[in-house]
Length: 402
Image (tube, rainbow, N blue to C red; front, side, top):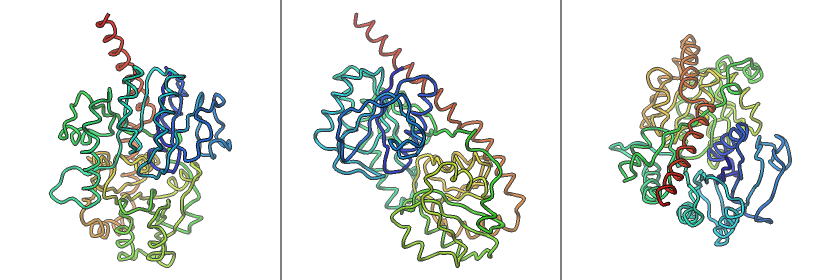
């Protein structure tokens, strides 16, 4: 099958990871992938590449991409981890490339770009089936919504009418499907296919990280340092608990709030700022060496960082936003209310220090939950089945027209 995939290559965010992992897995299963992404300096509208990029090739920045076949750069004025502003020319480039490549199906990992809203029109003109993955973070309807949660809900309200024109929209959880349903997207238009983790790569194993960081008990946060991730609440709780020099908190990631938060809490508080770790194996080593993973977000979709930590056998703590609470439900981890995170963590952090026997028990349950529900292999099988279902339905429509 030939899939035209529209997603992100940069800057690093969940969409980039999702696109990389899924397209690489599709290639491994023998499918052809043409990869479309936005670039601010697109020198060529279409660039033919070798069948697979090498993991450390200068073409891919050494980040594990192995896209084969064809890469198409769509010109844009601006792109960030949150949204993209394409040029007026981008629609023409996209349409011409799809017409020349003639894929079996188009799959857009939506980039919060104006192009998302005209994709159905383009694909209808070219008679191409169109699938979307819609993964902006969300918080389920509650009596109290933060400003960030309200903004995310507005994103869902904006997109819902347009998702009706996609053949199918993929979301990561039943809760997300319900949110779209309340906004008028019929259940039959939405497929729940969760994020998946390569459980061979992300697995428990030996690591020297604790020894290198001089920690007896290692807590870790991995993700962007941004307002919606609520890292400040974690740092407040950490400082107020004062767990002692044997307990360290490692912050893995970067973002707009990093400079100010590094001033607020540093090595004198046993907080270690490791920055963005580009090398995947290094990130795995950090997870394997840690005891407890903490994700205090105000909004989420389905956190891949959380699933990776669970797969590595960490005891996990996360807020009940997006699908994260669903992932950790029924004993697979500790679920926090998104209101009052600091207060809740002030109780939990000393508990994990003083009762270390809890850590391996929760870690085993976390890994088993991933093995049962969130493997990349299972994710790709569901995706292949969805593609086949959509193509079969299209063939049936053609037969009836004849």
